[in-house]
Length: 238
Image (cartoon, rainbow, N blue to C red; front, top):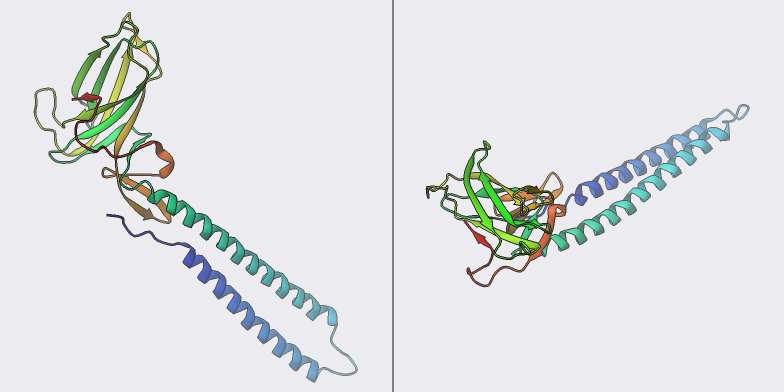
């Protein structure tokens, strides 16, 4: 389900239109007062034309500014429409986002992915709850002499701790440690939250992707995948 997308440009257009209407009213009032003054001026001491000429120039400058604002609003509206259209393309896709945390639904599963640098012979990953407590630890050793093949690996968590107990719904984080042939930690492991883009949601004029229950700015997305055709999948299952 796609939530409604709020169009914030309507508000700015209303402001510009209101300003233009007010300027037109003020200008009409100015002309009425000017005409009255000219009709009733003292012939022996006529009005200084510089004064109302300056006021006419000021009205013209304000009108130009309002017109410029209208043109800028049109450009912003076009850019926002293009961005909204782009974000709609995310709906139904699987994405990796720059975040280590995911939301676990009651009785559900959670997914991450991680990317290893070269030379990693062993991997240990820990799943932590919102308080930082480790609820599941898994160690994986490469069956290749050269170590793990560089690339993105999916971690599918069944939502259970190390004893097979179902964990409560909430936010969980994945930490991945890569180890070399000597068992030392290897820097450069990257972890991403993975999920389905369920909807778009606009909050205070900013559009967010709703990914498996969590909200992310579109720029947080690092990879986009077509949804799987079945549940066979690949990668690590925990």
